[in-house]
Length: 355
Image 1 (spheres, rainbow, N blue to C red):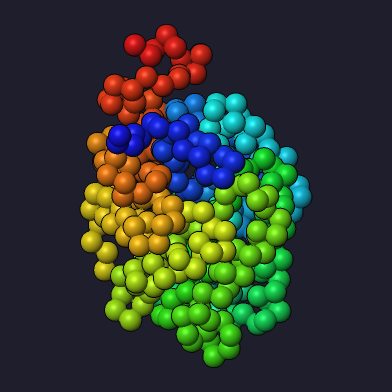
Image 2 (cartoon, rainbow, N blue to C red):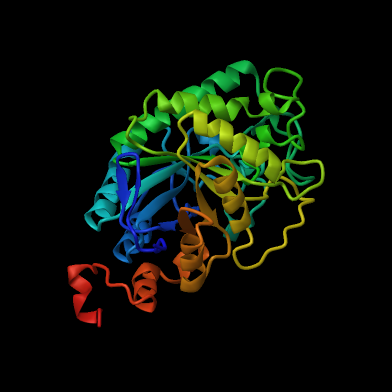
């Protein structure tokens, strides 16, 4: 029997009511890392709209790990209370709250997109960025500091502490952000990692940091809670990280109690050439799933009910992770169910509009 977009899906002890997931999308709307009413309404409306899984945007594990001064954070205990308010509401609507833990690395210390999206100046509060090697992202970014072993040890502590806070805030799934040219991704790729120590050079060395982060998170994350990793499946640049590397990495992460690979791509090099089109990254999720047996999520230009349903029915991925279309239509899940002639629960307050 074919799998449906609206079939429940269980990962460890967590059951999602359907396969539709709200992708982590930066809102650049925080002050000092704090969530606020914008985030409550933004994520809460998509929970009302029927999505099974809601992933909080990239949330910085340290102040210097923010992309911009307006990023969400979870580096101090004071951040927990409002996040708890959000997760409580998400769960009240039958959805599962997840959080993406992140460090922006050499792409940190920028202004928000609608404020220019460029590197901050010293008068604007710029801070020292970190990376595997002192290679700037582009000629408009200052050179980052090559991380020392002490910096790496602190990063591991930051991810562990962020996970503890995320659990206290009520999140049920943790996703590690290892994509899009941010810190962990920049360690994976030979384009940005030219270290000569245990964290650079060979494939095994370049994946070491991510493996250590998964291991330290698993020391505090309950065994019955899922752990996801978002990767850039390819750099889209000759000589960079490839889909073959991603398949190899996914097989290793599976042995380290990672449950699902969220398959994105690009973001680590300005030389990338991406053939963007409908479902253009789904092929990565499909290959990783079939060659390693790990669960995968498909993301990238998935805009229609037909596209989303086909990904699940054809077993190309286990979750459909939607971004822009969820911005356009917070109630996408409710509308998709109607298109598929599937009866799903609506919020009681909206029942008068169901038919």
